[in-house]
Length: 466
Ligand code: PHE
Image 1 (cartoon, helix red, strand yellow):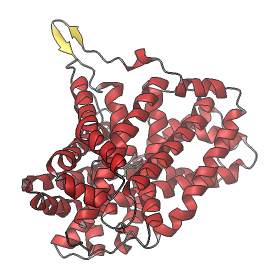
Image 2 (spheres, protein in one colour):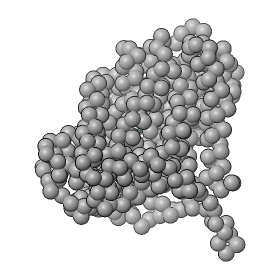
Image 3 (cartoon, helix red, strand yellow):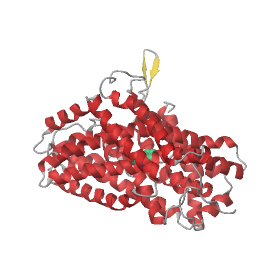
Image 4 (cartoon, protein in one colour):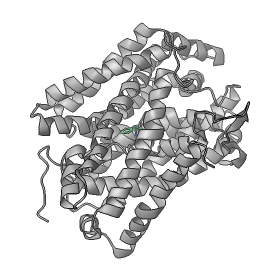
């Protein structure tokens, strides 16, 4: 096949692709979401399921997304349309791209609100407000932030503007350089926090919570109440763990596919995917190792929910030497990690608007930013004036998070696995991967049988089928 070129340009090297994709993967999912959902779902056993999902579902699907993107060299919508034509499959497969664009809007709408919390904490840390804080103090600090729609709105707006600015300029300039230095810096600060956690006297408890599995905590059963079967709507820890594997690796919605479409031809896809997954997992585990000892040392609740890191880390910074500086730096880096993820959430939509509507990147970013900002209002109000407005027992924020991470991303991933494993000709994927025969066979087995099977089994389990 004659090689396609992307009209949006190309990463200057494989290293840059890896940095950008790691920038997309490592974000609030690792530092904010992973600890709190681990806390809510009982710890060790949940972590094991999550790690298995990363290895058996995440890595093969990430390879598939990069491969499809690099072969199609367009926005995910057009890539899927072009590849299905080429492979003799139904054009409806471009729906993967459409659902990805929608998922990107939804995720960014609340991602930006949470990133706004991190921005607010930069200001608080910078002003020295953490010093000497105890558990009650951090709680009231957090509640006064999320309880105020005006403040949340202001920070959400600021973060949205930051994201639109970078996307408008083009993902390849600017942020790419920032990520090169900021990611390693975030990593070092997490190590520092783990060092602090070691001295809390509760490090072992923290590690046990994270790594010693109690499989009874995974059991998810439906109960018959008054002759009617009732399932707890969460879908259970298995669904949350699998959904998070997709979320944290940015899979199932086209972000990695669109980044793959800018990848140079000769780079190894398998090696890149494994490296990105390893780095992403390491950051999440370090965040967990830093946070749980602090949780136990201060008598906090591991299942405290979305505020968990904002109610634990300030205690650590408030009590350590140099905490003023480190605390500020930490939240700055968290904002950068969120920033480099947020731009990948809108890039698939921007690429499509540029290709099909002949819009400039600037106009496309403004439109998308504005729409997402409006949807984000629902999340802003979920924590205050709408906190009692619930559908299926979930607030607007819970609902969007559930719909995207637990349903849309795994479903997108399942379709990507089916397309690349069952519909695409073996010769095509083999040509695109250009890797050793045994590695290819391993991927082929995983993407055809293991990944789709795992996703389907977890879905069936979540709707209470067994
Ligand atoms: N992976 C990002 C994180 O962990 C979130 C994300 C999801 C980004 C999907 C892009 C696509 O924070």
